[in-house]
Structure formats: structure tokens, C-alpha cells
Amino acid sequence: MTDQIPSELRIGVLGAARISDKALFLPVADTPGTSLTAIAARDQDRARTQAEAFGIDHVLDSYAEVIESDSVDAIYNPLPISLHHEWTIAALRAGKHVLCEKPFASNATEAAEMVAVGKETGLVLMEAYHWRYHPLASRIRALLDDGIIGQIERIDAGFNVEVPPDNEVRHAWELSGGALMDLGCYPLQWARFAAGSEPTVVAASMEEGRPHVDVDTTIDMTFKGGITARVATSMKPGVERAAWLTVSGSDGEMQVTNPIAPHLGNRIVVTSTDTGAQPVVDEEIGGDTTYHCQLVAFRDAVLNDGPIATGGVDAVATMTAIDASYVAAGLPIRGTEL
Image (cartoon, rainbow, N blue to C red; front, side, top):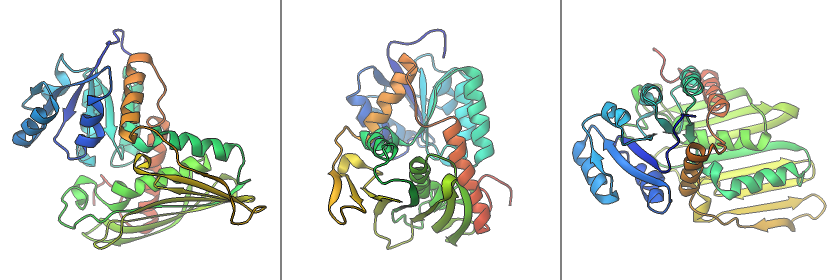
């Protein structure tokens, strides 16, 4: 941590990404101890529009000006994935804490370099996997740790969202796009979270849209203790939006509805081999939006040295599994030369 801990977290924003509205701007409005002080984007008109709409103090001319600004304590980095490494490290070197959008980097090598700079500078570096900060995640962990389904044997997780082929960020190789990068990173994390260990990728199949860019992906993996898992994701035209997590064990099964955005409705249903179809757990977990929970955790990590669940070792592990999946499917690792 830095020697001087601010009493309020003043946040600067890189780019004018659409995700920023719900991921940061709206949560800041009802999160004490946070404020928006600067933004810069390639599209300055869009940056000015966001600044006016959400009360951002200054529209600056460049990302560099934001990270060097004395009015900024921390950076939110929602830039295309291919720019996460460069600008996150630049922000850390400038003495700024960083909340970096998922996935953390183009590949595991970049992620490890980012984490190393975070450790070197002693600053907070957090990956924006917002679902992990909602009470639903803690409830899932507690139930599994209590052994409610016995020994975990199988995990199935997936996330599908149609992404139009003309979306230049998500479908562009040069920007580290792909269904696994943009969507599948979530169910991959859910599987790792449920298993409580790191996977070995056994096989992966990927349907390409643009060259080297997956639009439909299925990954088979194993975890410690003989746990098997399948992670699926698709952004193909016409695919129906869906998010699921099923964990099967020796004594029962857990089904989690909407692990991606539990604030919009969720369900945990656990059935037991002893009770048949009659659930032993059937509950909805309340809480603020995942993005609000994430911002509170980031604020508390900076201001109060609070814990973070995503970043560091976890961020590198996620990218390692993603890299292995691309290799298994015969596609190049993002951010590497063709």
C-alpha cells in the first residue's frame, strides 16, 4: 500500500466503454467514499457525454494524463483486452491503484507481469469479476464446504450471449477477442471456484467466426480429486442468453441459476440422493448489484487494506486455463504473433 491513504477513493477512467455505466458510474453514485474525477477516451465526444451524465469532474486529452493526474487515486481500466497490460502497468507505475476489467490480460504471461508490478508497487490490483463479490458466491462456497452434496464429482458451467459479428472489440483477433475471452472466462471461473483447485484442460473444441476468433467453445477439464468439468460458451448469432452452474456430487446436486447477475434474480437449489427430487435447499440470495459489491470491495481494499477475491494468483490462474484451452483447440493464444 502507499504511505498516504486517501479518505476518499478518487477514480479516473480510461476510455468510454459501454460497460462503464453499470460497472462503475452507477455504483459510484450510491457508494460513499468514492468519486469520479477524470476520464479520457479516443472518442472525446463520448467521454464528454459520460462526464456530463455521471458527474465526472475532468475530461482529459489522453490516458496518460488521467493516470498522471493528481486528482486521481485509482484507475478503472475497461479498455479492449489487448490494452489491459500496457495501461494497467502504466497506471501502477504512476502510483495508482487499478480495477481492471475481465479478462485480466491477453494471456497468462501478460497477467503475471501485471501482478508482479502490482506487488512491486504495493498497490491494489483487482480484476473486475463482479459476480465474485455478491453474497451468492459466498453462499455457494459455504454450502460446498459444508459437504451438502458430498464429494464433488462433476461441474457443468456455461454462459451464452449473442454478440453481433460486426462488434469490433469482441470479434477482433488484434484486440484479443473471442467467446472464451469475453464470455467463457466467467463459467471457467465458476468451475474453478466450485472445484477449489486449478484445472487440467483435457480437450477443447472451438468454432471460428473471423480467423482465429472463437464464437462457440466447449472445454473439458479435470480437477484435483478426479472432478470432471465441462465449460461452454457461445456468442453466435441467434443463441439464447443463458448462464448456468451445476455441481454434482456423491450425495446430491447443486443448481445455480443466474450466477452472472444474481441481483437480477437467482436461485440455489440443492437436491440430495436421500430425498430424491425434494430440494434440501431452495433459496434466493439477496444483495446489492454485483457491481456495487465489487466497487465496495475495491474501495475497502484501497482505503482499509481490505481483502480482494480476484486478482493476483487468481487472475494468472484464469488466464493460464484460457491459454491452455486455446492450445487444446488448435487456436493461437491471444496476444501472440501469428
